[in-house]
Image (cartoon, rainbow, N blue to C red; front, side, top):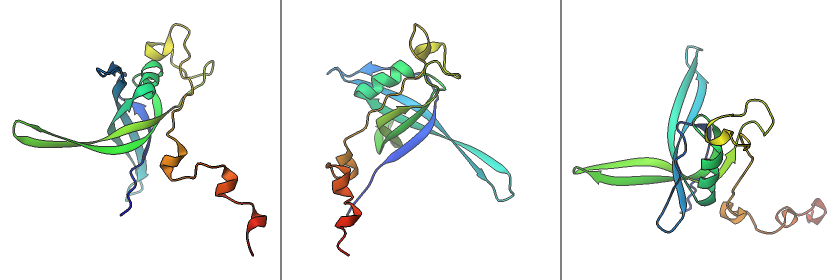
Length: 160
């Protein structure tokens, strides 16, 4: 049976990024992301709903988040769902979270309006936001690793 586990979220960080390292030296951080949803209710009024999602970032992606993001910063996260389970005081607990595999910094470019000027992303000559992206290899999405022309042959190669 086939399965597919992919999540794409666009939201704002709910707290500052706290970077830590595993004993082997791998960077890791847990961030909170607030994702807003706006829809019309049955009576025609707009309903605003916020979903809070916990996201874990690893490696260079975690370091980039720590360097350029802070509370309130917008970010686009792509990853996969993971169910964490644990037992405390004889009670079984579980929590669904996202393992972030790609991070896209969203916001104003250096020198543009709306950028942050303080906190971890702002001072000391650093740009408020720097466009940075880590993406897993295209093979992980089921796409061929060859060129685009191999995946989509020219029209003249169609046999009819």
